[in-house]
Every structure is written in C-alpha cells, then in structure tokens.
Image (cartoon, rainbow, N blue to C red; front, side, top):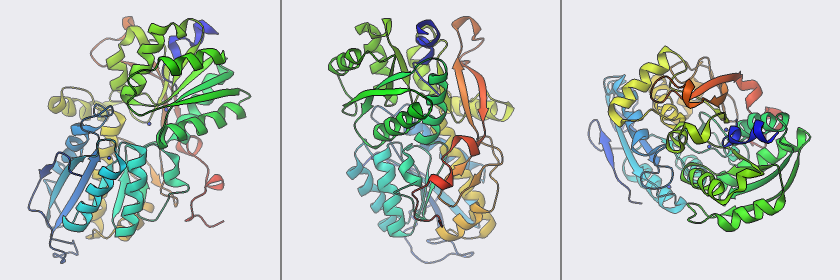
Length: 416
C-alpha cells in the first residue's frame, strides 16, 4: 500500500482595498445611466479580484486578469455597442481588503461582474456583497462548497470546481487504493475547513476512518509542529487540506521531516503550477482532481499556448475558468443586450456553455455550473515529452456525478 500510495498522492483527485489595478478598454464607466441597448454606465465592466502577491499568486494573480482580457479580446473589446473594460485588484488574502475593493468597484466604478476570488473567505464576501448591491459574481477561484449551500444567492454563480467535487473524487480514489485511515493538515479558513469536512465525509462513506486534524494559519512559515501531530496519529494518509504555497511548503517539509517514510501525503487541492514547482521527480505517480488541463485537446492547447506567450507559464484551472466565466458573461450580454444580473443569470440557466474550458456545461438553480471533472495522474519524468507535459487523464467524471446532488443542498433557492 505504501509504494502504491506514497509519492502517488501528494495530490489527490481536487481548490481578498487598494490593490494593484489593471484596466483595459474605455473610461471608468461611473455614469449610472443606460446606454443604447440597456447597458449601465455605457460600458461593460468586469472586475478580477485575486491574489497578486501571496501564496496563490501563481494560480491566479496577474494571470487571471490576463485571462479575462483575452476573453474581452475575443469580442474586439466591445459588446452590445459599448466598450468592455477589465480591472484587477489584489485582495492580499484578507477578506476585509477584498470586501472593501469589491464595494468600491460596485459603488463608485460601475463594475458589473466580478470573477476569480481566489480565496474562499473572499469568495463568500463577494457573494454576499453582490447580492446586496444587485451585481453578478462568477466565482472561478474560490473552492468552498458553501457558495452553493449556506451562502448561495441569486447573484452568485460558482464556476469551475468546488470542495465537494474534489473530496468526492479524491476521497473515493484514495480509500479504494488502500488509504483507509486519515489525518488532516488543514489551512485555518473557509477553504481548508470545507476541504477537510467534505473529504472526511467521503472517506467515512467509503469505509475509511478520520483519526483527527490540526489547523495551521494561512501562509504558514513552519509546519514542523503540525507534522509531529500528523505523525503521532499513525494515520495511513495525511490529507493536506490547503492549497498553493501552503501545499508546496507542507510537502517539502514532510519529505525533509521524514513523514513520508511511513505515511502517505494526499494533497487535496493541487494545481499544475504546484507540480511545476515541486517537479516530476517529487510528484510522479500522484493522483489529483482537476477541472481543466492545457493539454486535453486541440482547443485547450491553443489557449494554453496563447496564454504562455503572455505569461511564460501554462494556465491553471483558475486562469482557464476566469477566461471562460468572462467569455460566457460577455456572450450573455451580447445575446440579451443587457447587463442586468437577473437577465444574465436567466440566460445562462437555459443556455449550454461551450468553449475551450468545458463542453455542454449548464447552470443549476443553486448557482453551481455542472461540468466534467478529471482524475489525473502525474507522469514519470521519462514519460514527459515536452515542457508542462505533466498529466495522464485517468478518468473523466461527469458533472452530475462529481458535484453535490440538489437533494443534499442547503441552498435557500432550492424548492424542497
């Protein structure tokens, strides 16, 4: 079991006011009047709230702003007769900083839609403020399943992936591979809590046991005391309920600390940028869940190469999801000649979404976009034929199987 699971599962089937500002298109659009065609302020304005300076910057950051710009460029930076403007800001992984920037955007800058929110606490704040201000949130970065449960609302769309799908696929895969007993090393905020709770539930349902958990601060500098507790648990699997720099640093520390001699690490939210940072030698054989991979097909490869030309790295699922969310939003604005969030959501709820990010995806009444997810396995160094050639696709999991059934939802929008 040890050899089967060891470096196999550093990741397992898977992931805020002043900030730096980036703008594209015309004017500030602060005018609250309607332009021809019913576009408020005479501009369609999209905000990307993300981590540009912290442990998640590689997953989102300027790459997410670039991805949104690429979507706007598909329309020639104009839609429904008006200019498209994209602005970006750094939430610094602080919910209050993110909330202040979002309110500023909505109150004074006429931002119509906000995407990314690569931090679950920021994502929850974005959802609440969007409902309060009657704006639209299309969250491609935050993973917490609370966004379609306790914190769902009619102004929030959860795009791409969530902790339920990550836990469902990864928990099942690891328990079936022999990893029956678990201990969680958890990032102490909404993302980590959701990953731990959702994965723990699936471990138990699959016949496994959760022996305990310890929580570490976001962007922790020293993992030794947490790893001692994990080691003392004698669990077969230590689930890393964290992401980005925290996952990378906890993996490195676990290897240096000797934990991996007797226990298996399972990274529950792993991105291609993490694999690139850790290297194939350290991650070969690893299983992980992802919602997108640049080398899936010809369409994904075209986007990946275009993104690489600008950012000098291949896009993560967050980058691709932010591009797709922006693209689908603009398609809805074009089709309805409106930027009213209720009109946009009604359109998206009855229209299949097709682009390089997903095929025949659809918006469910709880705000969850239902789309395929993928079980990946990291290649051996000898199997990688070119840069960023990192994954085997081991299974495609249909959205109806990957995401939480409506019958289990705590969303107030669901009619019971």
